[in-house]
Length: 165
Image (tube, rainbow, N blue to C red):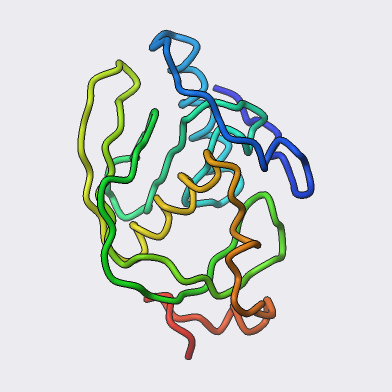
């Protein structure tokens, strides 16, 4: 496995729509493994392929609560519901945090690393992380959705549930 360099804003790579994955091979598996190692090394909860310089529709999310790593290849959002505003950050925007409104619920169809299809439903923080990563695949960056910038000191006051104290 390898730790990859994380692409930082304002790189044009981050604003491009990614291409569908057509080959489910060892190269894809290595990309997913390297993305996971990179995300863990950077203390992130999600990472999309364009953040490591690859313009393909691949993203991962790991909530770090003993849950399996979510690997999404060619993800498509099929349903959303509710709305909640929470603080977000992004590995491509070090030190920037802001309040972002996102759906509370999401249903996604995606493919596994072997090409098999699956459906996933998520709520709350997990839904937020999934949608944040899928946005990356469409060239949409979280800074364009910030309704209020949060000072990092204020962000440190966020409790375990992700709510401001």
